[in-house]
Image (tube, rainbow, N blue to C red; front, side, top):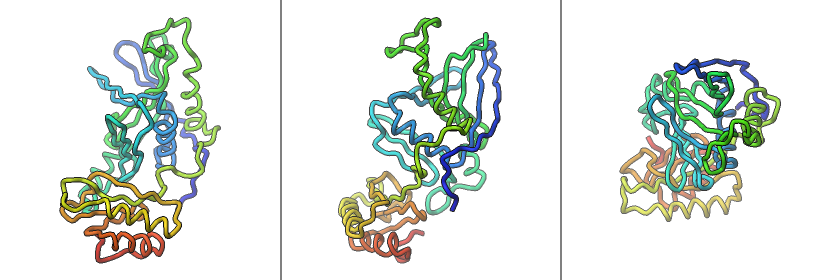
Amino acid sequence: MSTFSRLVTPLNLTEIEHLPNGASIEYEFFPTDLDVTAPLLHYLCQERWQNIGIGHMVDGSVLELEFNAAPKLFKLYDGYLTVLTESWHLHLCLAENLGGPDRRTSPEQSQARLVSRAALYRRLNPEGEPRSWGIQFWNGAGVKMMTFFLPNPFVGDNEDLLSERKPNLEKLKLYEELRETYILGTKEIPYDRNPLQKRYISVCRSSRCLPSREYQPIYEALQEAVKEANIDDIEVCVSGCLEVCKMGPVVFYSDDKTWYTRVTPEIAKQIINDHVVGGVAIAKHVYP
């Protein structure tokens, strides 16, 4: 297992994309391994959610979403980061996507879905002056994925445009902080471990599979077993579909990507005691 490093090794790679109107976009690239992208996105979505927007930009359309509160969920499942808010959610592929326990995703699909390039950007006007700032991701097929919009010193608090002679330069502090951390490698990541590597055990609450079977007793049994075993580095949570339909209740253990089916409260406690603590999976209930 690799050791988490709080200092990013710079790529020292810059590219300029020239636009038809004479403007351009300056990209400064940073590594895309999970120990880099996970802390970055955790920091933005969980701690600086008030300051950012998220969306897509393609010719002819722009989508931009904002947070009204910190996300309710920030989890990595089968390679995809899920960020869930009160009114919308996003998925971004940061690690290998297997396609569920049946491994339905081909190696070619997995590579195409995965974030392959990432950069801080500055959008420059035809005179070469920066006018917007953000983060851009690309997938393995070279297609632009999600864009994170950073504070703009030329935009006021009420989304009004400020005079170009009187920008609010305080708004560039987040961009500068991220650049020092992820581009230059001179400022430490603000965590001592990867935020997405904390173990969790999740119970499927999707109504699409065996809705007559309640997930709540399983959830409560897992919580009780974790408390009794005095484990403080694992989270018990619920989730949407875990891709093992019609064999519920279904439980997923993130540490070694194990799916359990036909789980009862008694089996839930055994999963904690034998698997989480003892390291031995309950073979009879493992899927597939």
